[in-house]
Amino acid sequence: MNFALTEDQQLIRASVAELAAKFDDHYWMEKDQAHEFPQEFYDAIAGGGWLGMTIPEEYGGHGLGITEATILAEEVARSGGGMNAASSIHMSIFGMQPVVVFGSEDMKAATLPRIVNGDLHVCFGVTEPGAGLDTSRITTFAKRDGDSYVVNGRKVWISKALESEKILLLTRTTPREDVQKPTDGLSLFLTDLDRDHVEIRPIRKMGRNAVSSNELFIDDLRIPVEHRIGEEGKGFSYILHGLNPERMLIAAEALGIGRVALARAVQYASERVVFDRPIGMNQGIQFPLADSLARLDAAELILRKATWLYDNGKPCGKEANMAKYLCADAGFEAADRALQTHGGMGYSEEYNISRFFRESRLMKIAPVSQEMILNFLGANVLGLPKSY
Image 1 (tube, rainbow, N blue to C red):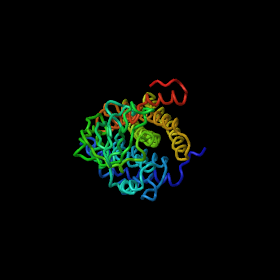
Image 2 (cartoon, one colour):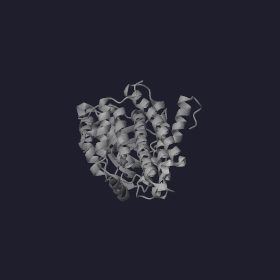
Image 3 (cartoon, rainbow, N blue to C red):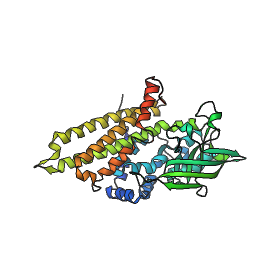
Image 4 (tube, rainbow, N blue to C red):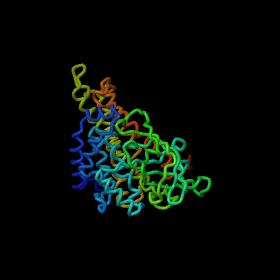
């Protein structure tokens, strides 16, 4: 098994790191504290052509795989931008896969080139207050009315809704009680986020505040039939196409935050002198940081296996979920230890470690919790009785 990155992949890593380094800690601190979208960073990534990494070449993209996308995501987070940086571009990097695979030619021609050049922001509308991780329980409903659907309902935790022109929206088109499988009767749309019929309310939250999370209140939103992706009632199967890659991207971002937090802790431990010696000489400081290095490196291996499997058309559900689980744990543990290494200064905003801590904690919850991953592994890999 060859673990070496290709020359092109090494160039991607180096180029993205060089670009992201232009946006320093002060930039990200100000954006986070002001709850302001990092438009300058987003424009720079778009200008470098990075948003089109996985978009097919016929639509202006590079047609690369999830391996290259995770390299980009890791370096963006590792630059110090963390989840504020990664979340600003996450949906553009791989979130449009349902459109790439199942969208009509007209839909792809109208939207994918705009994703590549950065002109089009799209948010993903799946989660609902009463459904949580049980997507089959969503109640937002699209009722057919001639050549349109009329949609009413509510969505929650929708990132980038404030900036987005369009929404990739999952709704029911057949009531749950009228379908054979709970996940049948769901339809997926790519449509305009019409502010006259969609109220957007930002959610006050613990961190990652440069990229908004929002509640959406949808009231008689009319969607043309041509905005539906694929067949009516098949929407759940379409979003599944993007779930494993999403787990891999999140894993890479968690890995990147862990790497930068560890690097900052090592630097501080080498420079901070207490009792006439650098604190990094003390095994109480040194051993936890060395342990985090081992755990980050080990988590990266399962991520690399997962992306290789996906890019080679092989089953990867087990590895994708393991990668998200292990990278999220390792990334948060590294950030927590970095904060502990910095002591009181870690709790301050001055060293940015508290920002890494807050953002890395999110990775153990979103887009799927650690507990749900264990449920998946227990039932689908180990063959134990399903617990939910």
